[in-house]
Image (tube, rainbow, N blue to C red):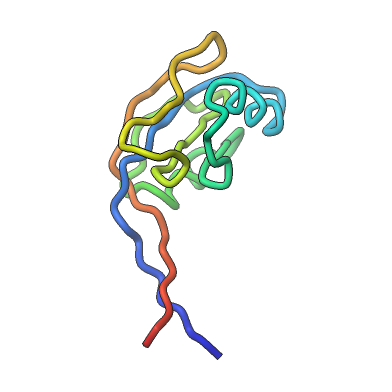
Length: 107
């Protein structure tokens, strides 16, 4: 049986705010905005923001506490710049330095 070691790797995470009735609607809007985005590396947070953000940030940045937050992790897109831009439904809050978990096989 292979064992794994978890490491938190530094990452620049782009955050947007919006107001979506559900996660599927947020994902659909993201696909309309950036069709090549890998949604497996996107977090849509509709409630309990601080607890969910603490998985990526320490300390948690000051962000709006209502509405929907969308975190675009670096693995969601090719290249350095996030392809998602401001839309009628998304407001960019900025890029914040955080961490993403990475599992590697323990030798």
